[in-house]
Amino acid sequence: MTDQSVLQVSGARLAAVPQVAESARAASAALGVDLLDDAVAARVLAEHRRLKDSGGWHDELGAVLVVGGLVGALILKGSLGSTPLEAGQVAGFAAACAAVPLGLLVWVLGSRSGSRKQQAAERFAAYGTLLRLAREAGVPVDAPVGWAPAPEAGAQPGAVTPGADASGLPVLPARLITQDHALWRTAAEIGSRHGVDYLDEQAVRTVLGAQKRAVGRIQLQAGLITLGLLLAAGAAWIGTTLHAPAGGSGHGSTGTAFFTVAGGFGVLTLLFAVQLVRGIGAWRGSGTKDRARGYLELLEAAHRAGLRMSVPSWLDTGGISKNWS
Image (tube, rainbow, N blue to C red):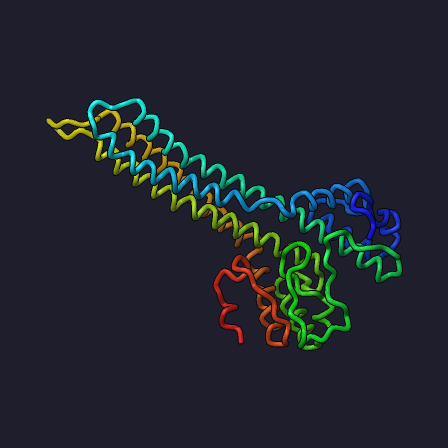
């Protein structure tokens, strides 16, 4: 295997193969990179190696901060009813409250990191496709380190359970589709309805990548709305508890501050709701939802033909794959 720091073949040699040049143009349009440029290709490989094993801790840390902050605030809230207030009580309560937005920030940053990792994986898989096409055309090159080639053309459809490719997306190898004439016709018919060539693996990656990112954003925004409502309600409840009733004792200024915090969370929740509506509208209006649904339809046909792939929830948003038989 060629050393990881060295490209397997120069872009000039790849560009000399017509099929490779055509695939590279499609990848450039879909992914925004010129994979025939050696400097760009080297960055793509380096970026994928750097990010492929990263991530995974943002969600956990964010959840710990949010849940811990809420629980801590509820526990410390009782001590605020004492008179007089102590500096340690106020500081502890403030730290618990601050942990909640900090956890949200970590969550958002983790989501962005995941998007960069997915994009790097898609570009890496596209470069691997160029090398595969070059090898099929007779150019002697190795596959990039970590790239898993599609099953060989001689594989029997009934005996194959394809998995996700190097991009981490459930791309059904085109060579397996073309082995079954009925499945090939189904792919062509579905593709004509949605304006996508589902035999073009790079086009499929583009569709699936857009679907995964769109659904991920929608789920994140929905989660933020739920959390915002909980925080607003919690802050309002604490404010009501601390606010002194008429003629009674209490901490009126502290209670008022919590009402202000509740209002702030309410405004943020409204902004998240607006972003959610816009995100759903863009998902539908751009055609991403319909193109992904078309590919899900093809996967169902492939499932009946014996090609059974694992379908992620972000692709099958309606859960219909559970009823495939």
